[in-house]
Amino acid sequence: MLDHQSGQGFVSDGSHLDALAEINEKHERVKDEFSNNLELCAGEAEEFVEQPVLDSDALEPFIDMQFNSREEAREFYNAYGRRMGFTVRVHHNRRSRVNNQVIGQDFVCSKEGFRAKKYVHRKDRVLPPPPATREGCQAMIRLALRDEGKWVVTKVVKEHTHKLMSPSEVPWRRSEKHLVSEDEKDRRIRELSLELYNERQKYKRRCAAYEEQLNMILNDLEKHTEHISKKVADVVRNIREIEEEKSDSKGR
Image (cartoon, rainbow, N blue to C red):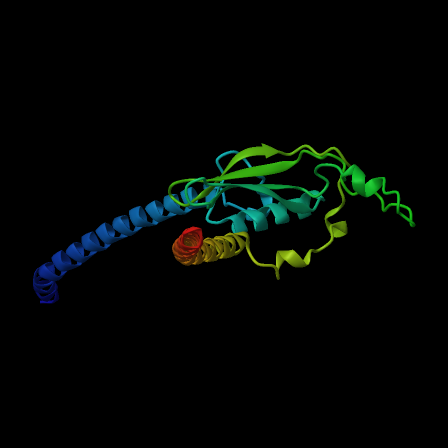
């Protein structure tokens, strides 16, 4: 009786075993998919970790390096100079002949060039000359403005002809935070140049108007002078005719 009941129980539970087997199969399939996704994520994480991280503090200037503005390039070279142990000076720029826009800029070591002799050997100098601050250093970067508006490094000189300072010895310059940016300076220069050009054009037009009025006055004076000359000539001729008539009457 017990075996019969147990057999019926075993038979009746067959569908449940199939369901459990199906659940286990689904569980294994989900587990496999999860493992594959986990391995894929791990692989992507490893690839991400292996990619080098760009550290701006470790950068050095190089050819074809790009900046969004001259101010950005100056800030970069100032930071680079501070790490290396020298200060930076804004050198001459190059302008377009078409619209006078700045299309090239040099940033140099502050010891670039030499002090002019006229400032060193002054005959009226009372105090001794200050120590030389320029030693002909050639370290610099040169930038050029490209069509897409990027400032690109076209020349780099890293070697210095003088002893470099430690980063803590490099003096902070007020210009690094408070002075107007190079782009702002250029914009202001172009605005002032345009104002000066407009003022010159106004002056030329005003001078042309004055010249026209003066020519009209001179023409009127010339005509008036000619008229007076004719009047005087007529008067002189009439006087001569009268005198001739009187002399003729006396002769008779």
